[in-house]
Length: 139
Image (cartoon, rainbow, N blue to C red; front, top):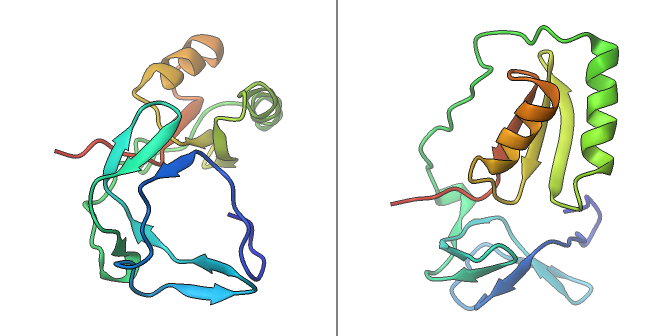
């Protein structure tokens, strides 16, 4: 989501969205938006909602495990810049955010079942790139 007013965004298709049960929404210039925890199913290209959205201000998720929380990466900063550029340009649009944190290239994608992490580990070595998934399996 771009930080503009009103916000602009893109991403995978969201199927079955209904603004009626979505509290805490805003509207400006014909655009409606809000921040929500959403439950549904992911088929690899589309996300289909299966429950009413929960405003993030009312949602208390389980903490996410950060595999880099208590350590720093060992890769050379110039090498991390090269890897960041390579992953960013070769990601086929699947990367939502990318950066360098505590000596690791960190990549957020819509969904990773572990296979994208595996590809990057094979390409750049373990403990160099950390993939985070925006969608998480629950249940």
